[in-house]
Amino acid sequence: MIEKADQIFVLLGHWLVSFLPVWLQQPVLVLLGVVCIIVTFPALFAITVLLERKGLGRMQNRYGPNRVGPYGIFQPVADGIKSLTKEDIVPLNADAVVHFLAPVFLVVVVFMGYAILPIGRNMTLVNLDAGILFFFAIGASTELSVFMAGWSSRNKYSLLGAMRAVAQMISYEVPLLMSSLAVIMMTGSLSPNRIVDAQNQYTFGLPHWYVFTPWGLAGFILFAVAGTAETNRSPFDLPEGESELVAGYFTEYSGFKFALFFLGEYVGMMGIAGLGATLFLGGYSAPLEVLGFVPSWFWFIAKVMVAMCFFIWVRGTLPRLRQDQLMNFAWKFVLPLTLLNLFDAALWRFMGPGLLRWFVCSAILLVAYVALARIGMTREKFGPRSYRYAE
Amino acid sequence: MSLVFYILAALTVAGALAAVLLKNTVHCALALTAAFAGLALLFLSLDAQFAGFAQILVYIGAVAILVVFAILLTRDSETPKDTVYGPRPLIGLVAAAGIFAVLGWAVLRSAAALPHENASPAAAPNVTVMDIGNALMGRYVLPLEIVALLLTAALIGAVIVAMHEKEGAR
Image (cartoon, rainbow over all chains, first blue to last red; front, side):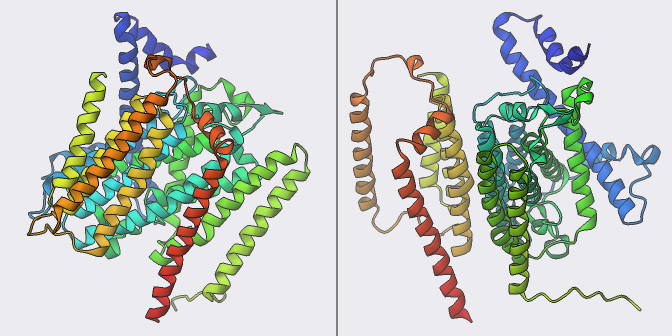
């Protein structure tokens, strides 16, 4: 029964396909998987948007959407209808073809990343040997879409936003890769399934997730920071800083193309969250051994949604960075720490089991963290924080 | 040679031609990206996963972005009024033909040097990413380190160039 619930989608797919001739079965099965991904994640996107608007409202002492349906739960539907029926304006001077291609390219590329994510046990669409590499290769192409959007609009705000976005995405891609490299090094495989399998073991009912090791925790935090910046998410959302650039690279987009950008951004965030869950949080494995009866796909989706809630929380809490702070943070703080974390992971591997490696590896990371932060602070000549209150 | 190969080859060649023939520099850069993507897909259709993904990661994710960035930073991206060809197109043509001849000669020679040139493609050994990693870290570790050193030197050089400019401005 537990096994059935866990594999329900796999079994359902095989059952549906069994009515077809043999030569058609495999392609249709893949197609079904693609359709499932394209349906599930935009649905989660709608839930996330509602959650975000409600949550941000709560954090900012206001109601958020509460007109459409009970407690405003049908707001995403209304938003969807609005963006579908709104006039699609293309600026007169815009490069029409590139202007059109940019959002389409973004959405296509963002969905391609899901091909390698193990959403549940036996639920990876394409079980690639070099899956993680595929995800990063695909993720790198989103920069091109951002550039296309910003350049083709023939708008200074758009162009500035695109240049900021591309510079930021290039800068944070390095720490993103480097922090995942520690996991790949420890697993000895680029395959997401192998990485999840390596973490899907339990001692005393507690899981072997990488996040529960010193290097894993540091890697996870660095990955979260880099992932937030990579998806242009607050507090790293300078490319679309509305107080300076209207809306950044999608200033000139309206109607459904804007909706596509919006969708692409959120689906990309869920993709990064899914990758982070796969790398550090044990992917589809249950957080406790006793909870193993809950289907594996539920855990993956739950982890992604928790990450999205975290993104919302961060957005509601932290102020936006300045451009130079953003770059300094990437190159002078995050990148050195990820490099050290690689070394730390290697040390962890070669020190063998025991309590000693916990102390040594944690100490190295803590000392480096404090030292880097102190040096950075003194060089910037920051004084002690001063608070001023309105009288 | 299957249908997939011809589609991908057409995409690659069309992208490369467009990169040379289009007037707008940014369009050229985007067409070049399409050519890179076609090449990556060709690698993938040959089951060379690592080469294909590295092609996407390096060429589309880094080189293409760098190209468009350079275009944006160095000159305004308006369409040039005059022709895109340089003052001496013939020299360029000769140089390109020369490089193509050398590359073609090298490829043909290496194909003849292969031990099983008549073997079917299906008989090719299944090379995984791990094999490539082992080869890079084992047999080819010296070239790898030399390349790494070269890249580090280039990186430091770039940083020094940038730093000088900043000091001059002060």
